[in-house]
Image 1 (tube, rainbow, N blue to C red):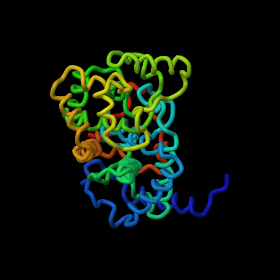
Image 2: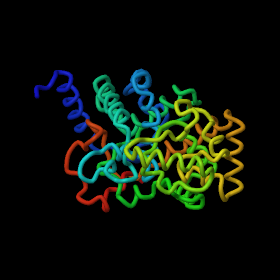
Image 3: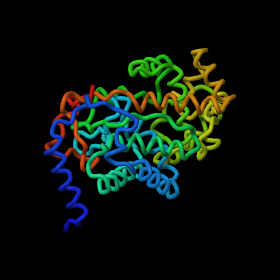
Length: 332
């Protein structure tokens, strides 16, 4: 296929960048204004692209949130989840059903940004920024994200991805999982509030049990009849970013077993749920604080093992890791 002049220009800028900056490292200082000089219109480009995507597909917001969570939690925010190929994190069961429109949006933003500024902004930074913008456009307070990250050369290992909290965990397992990443119980409860929007597959509901037997029967009956369908995570106000998720938990109509685990066994966590159910402003404030902690988890890139990808779905040169179980720990 013939290349446009714009594509040739981006390739040329990429080659220049590779020659001038061969030793880009994870040790470069991150900052909130990292791209102010190299790409001064970055935030406007991201804002406009996300706004247009939301108008076309509101589901892009929970899609971006899930991508960011699943990218940052295993090994820091390094864009590793965007890589495709035989050992891609996207092929692992924990990442089943990532929203394609959100993945496409990230790549579309990268294309616009690199055309305007050259390859100066990583896919990891673009993912983080797009998610923050989507959250703000949904009516939530903003949160700080440091920029200047590099993209990983390899996907996370299967063991690292397996550390993502699953839908069937009990509360002690959820607490331990979050603590392993430097996130506390308040972060656990606040970030779970992202389930006020978005959907889940029927596969995730097989072990939903306990509270509100009629509701559980309804879920299981629906999934038995329509096993390929998805279920709203907030069955009351699925399109609104609000605190209804916590009210649902109080009423026993949380969709996932891990949702309902928040009100079962731990009085402190149950009190947090009750507090967020009473006070939406507190939830919004804490959600933003916890998202900032998640978005700023340190990556595990080592030395020079990072790059600014020219395409978010593949590294610039060389093969993917041969074995997902030995996948490169992108950043440290």
